Image 1 (cartoon, rainbow, N blue to C red):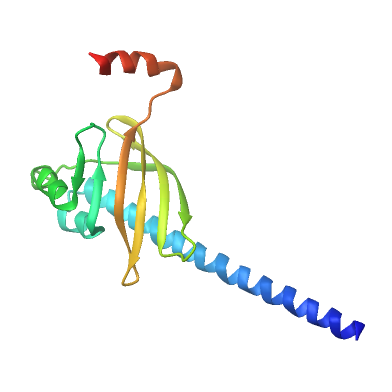
Image 2 (cartoon, rainbow, N blue to C red; image 1 turned 60 degrees about the vertical axis):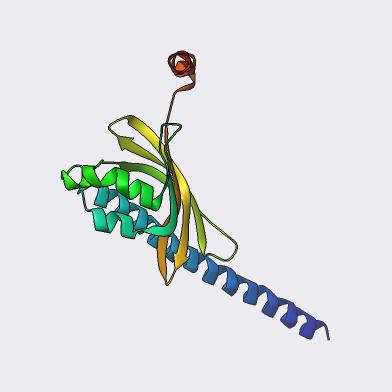
Length: 160
């Protein structure tokens, strides 16, 4: 009986280990896919590829820019961005670092990233959703980073 209990316990431990390994492999693959979507999105903007850029955004996507009035639906953002893309020069954001987190069902990704931009280092954060085996940007927030020791002077400018 004691041997049977030990074997039963070991089988449960090994089953849990295999589930954890499968989950880690799944998350690693999904992390790579989600990161690839974000990299392609930034690349499409850098190369003024309008269709590619907006095809990576969900139909209900929202883009929040750095100015307080910049909260755009996908359609409004497309209208705003089209002239820049048409001129062959949109914007170029290059990833410095990125963190990716998953929902419990691995169908939603939350992320934050630091970016080199024409404005200096910015932070992007948002949500991706998986639809038809493809990651799409649902919500993106772009923020200008301000060092803590410079915040007062920035606040003084904003108040004016």
